[in-house]
Length: 282
Image 1 (cartoon, one colour):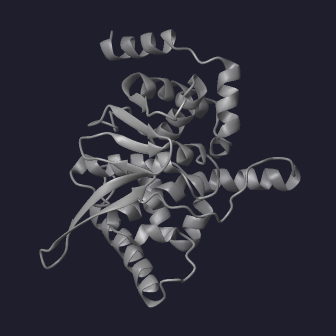
Image 2 (cartoon, rainbow, N blue to C red):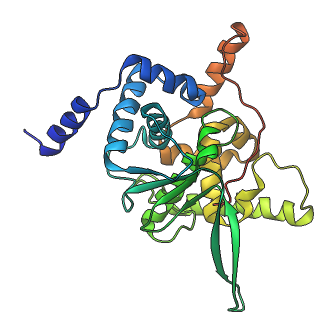
């Protein structure tokens, strides 16, 4: 049966082909894509093209983008959706704004007593409900490795979270998942992290301490680690990894371990996981 959606998809892909040298450079910049199967890579390439067709990248003065820059960002944006049906998961926004550096953003918070606090804070990323995603370009450029940092995945995880309304750490789960399992797992890990940091604010944390900010940041940070340092996430919160594996329908840890075994026999192979922590404050 003829499908307008499928025809439109084919038309977009045919009009915006990716040359092998272009994709090779994208792959060189993104070690976290190492170990994907040929079919997964092909799907990711196509979805990256479709992402760029549907989203506008607005570069502020001081940011210069070429086609490879755009594809590198888009490939990271689409990696979390790689094994999910194409159901417009990134709905509700059409623009990604790229700043040349961290930016100052006004913050507003109402505390438990009803007092409203307002202040300005420097962020490297933000995602607004029914609004754009804002990214600092140096943070995007620093993303893509197996080091526990990925600004693109972090901020777009907020967008997935917002599909249910305000960001609260609960994205729309698949029918095969139980909200009670998700809620108890995430809340337990979040509470444990906060208890440890309350006892010792300077305690070493396997996972970036920014995850303890609130449940929305916990989901975004652990999603970031799920794809860019799955071994560290499993070390800290194995049950959280299991829930994210059910949600994203991927197993980056197995892929990383396979790459590490390959690296053990071929020392020049690049795939590693390093305990490097960054914060997006967004």
